Length: 368
Image 1: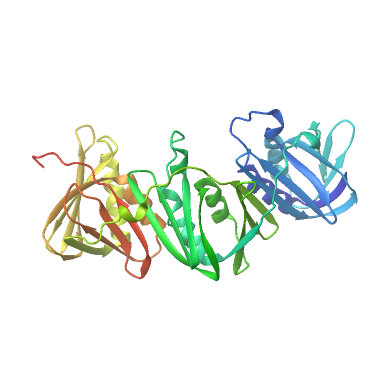
Image 2 (image 1 turned 135 degrees about the horizontal axis):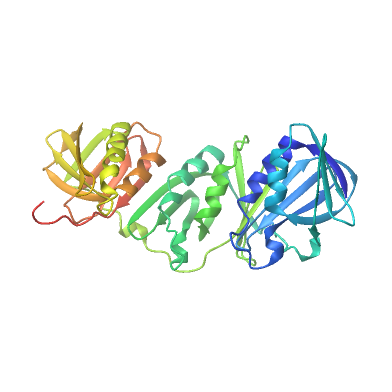
């Protein structure tokens, strides 16, 4: 294998591919990336056996070939190189990399030991890129990171006709987003790992549409992005009936400026971190008072103007859940509806009838 490519292109590809490396490889080869020539491109691959990626980079190929190289040192070396052309040459001693006056030799392992990343799909679903990215941003943060509940670490897709519903929950909060598809599809339901979707959302896509392939036989999904094939296994298990969790309507409805709310929550978080992350919301007549306190740090109170319809209410939340919500949405206003201090609160954005977020409150002490 002998080839030449641009440092900036190689660095960008390696940075993206590195997200798919396992933190603790169960096999030595999983700490490596696969380098393989394909016509006038270099294919760079990585996998953690749950997700895999093929990233294609334009290159001048002088000799075809393939090998694997330890990912982290190779990435660090390439990132340290100046802009310009990088030469890669596979020798008996290892993989030689050179750029200008800089040169390194890396040990290699056989490409035959690297797990195959399948991109076979029996059916494909098309999404508008901007619509899919918005749906990813508004759902993945609500999935759990608790490995003891793997199915809740995913985002459920429910497709019927031209509508697709994405849902994610960790048992304490729920995000639900409905989007329109470019074509009509038969009814189907599947669960994708939130981590895989998050990686899709990180990729800058210039095309208006994105295709996702599904393989029933291999129980996997594949996203076909510009110069990238991203595959992920589907999660198996029973996902909660999310429609039953969403409150129909609340006795009290609050509309407020999202940025003011975000600032007040971040301020309250300074004090809430030493008090189980609890922030208190006191809803009055056209105002919302946000407070937090702890004996070690002190206390804070912020008053925000708000449009309030319904009776006064007091409720408390984990501030992290509120911050995740406001940082996921891009609208200027936020709507909150609630019935009482013990019932789930419903959040939405005024201009979007397709997004709902539910957060379970924290129980308030009687004296509060």
